[in-house]
Amino acid sequence: MKITDLLDPRSISLDAAPTSKSETLDKAVELMAASGKLSDVEAFRKQVYAREEESTTGIGEGIAIPHGKCDAVKKPGLAAMVIKNGVDFDSLDGEPVTLLFLIAAPNTKDNVHLDVLSKLSVLMMDENFSDSLRNASSVEEFLSIIDKADAEQAGIDERLTAGSGEEAADRNGENAAQSGGQEIQAQKAGAETEKTVGPKILAVTSCPTGIAHTYMAAEGLEKAARAKGWKIKVETRGSAGAKNVLTAQEIETADCIIVQDRTITVIDYKYGQGVAVDAKENTQMMLYALGALNLLGDLFDIETVEMHIYQPRINNVSTWSAAAADLLYWADKTVKRIAAEAAKGKGKYKAGAWCRFCPHAGRCRQLTKTCTEYVETHSLRVAVPVLAPHEVAGVLEMEPLISLWLKRVKAQAMDTLLGGGEVPGFKVVEGKLGNRKWIDELKVAEALKAAGYGADEYTETKLLSPAAMDKSLGKKKVAELLETLIDRAPGAPTIVPASDKRPPLDRAAEAMKDFE
Image (tube, rainbow, N blue to C red; front, top):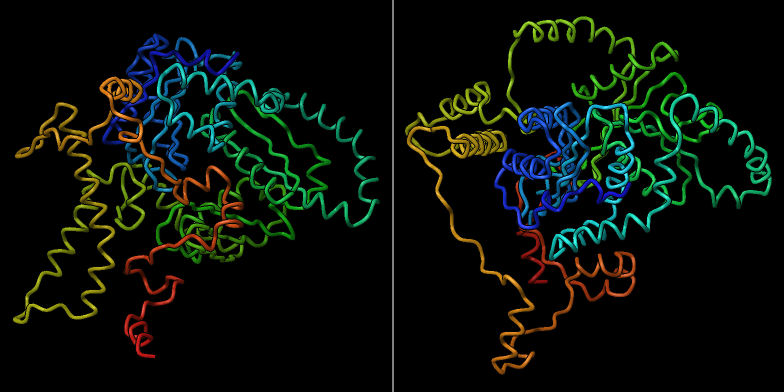
């Protein structure tokens, strides 16, 4: 089965222009419905939204792969959208989504289609492939790009069709036993062989529905390992079962394992460009640690949990360690009590920076109360209407939360009005028209040529930008050949917390250099 066997031309839109995440999902569901693969559109829509509540399917790099698996799907299918101007999708990297695939999977035992969908997920990790889809000029070209990549990537098929469960484990064990002697001989060849091979890394990836992100995460890990010349094997756990199963021998001989010396290491990889996050006494990390203890505590004698937060895009690494006994005590005395209250619909809501991840922020009473109370409390009640420096600092600390609140409230109002509801005193109107664009560039050229205009009068040749050159030649080659020919404007002055690792900007000192 090919990827395009699941993608009906009626379910492809190359000029979508949604203005919100909900509108994007609704449009994608409509495209899926157009292919006739749904028996109950609303039931499928609810399933897609329910999956989105678990975690965002905006994986970053402008890509989103929402998906739903339920009885409302008659036949497996795909819908695709190219969103030229992008749309806010709460993506992991905070960037707008410009390319989206919606996956519809039937709730059946036959999971042949899952390998096809998984292959698409892996292909999406290739920037050239994704960019080609974004720039497709027609549905036919869009399908042709997918067919070509599908045919060229036979190696992906081999990996995805590997067996699952105990059968696969047995087969992998046999293969490992057969190759064991060869590996030992390679090790005896000397240090140079070890240097070439690098460390052996084992990993397991999974997704709440096990359709797309399982394999995208695996591909991302493998890509990073290849770049460093390291060996890696990734076991994928999805709807079709476990594939590429790790063997006991492989686990025993791995260079990097998560449990070691009575210590569990928990790493939270944050790809966004927000503020630096501290791992010390971080509630989210402590809950992750409890999850790890619950999963592995019976198998290993764990004494310590190391928690790491890694934010590569802002160069932040934060580490904190805690005794397993202390975490379990916290769970027993604090977490259980709060969880029990929450299960009964009780407990206290607390607004904070974390609200930016909540899909209900736009209609949350506690967030509204927190923001409005701050404004009321800090209104000027003194004769001299001047804020003291510490008051300015307080306002700056609240600015992200208040801005988030206003943004989400506005988005909620937009969804309500577009959905036919009412917001007293407000309405939705068509905004400023977008920029003009040619409907068909070839026909424009033909018309001008017929009118006697030369090509030099309506076309231009332009050197690629540094960013476009990176994609064309590769960042390494551009840096090697053109680094001295690239200029970059300094960043605009930006106010950040004092904990930010960047040095403070001293304009006075910079000005003094002009007199030296």
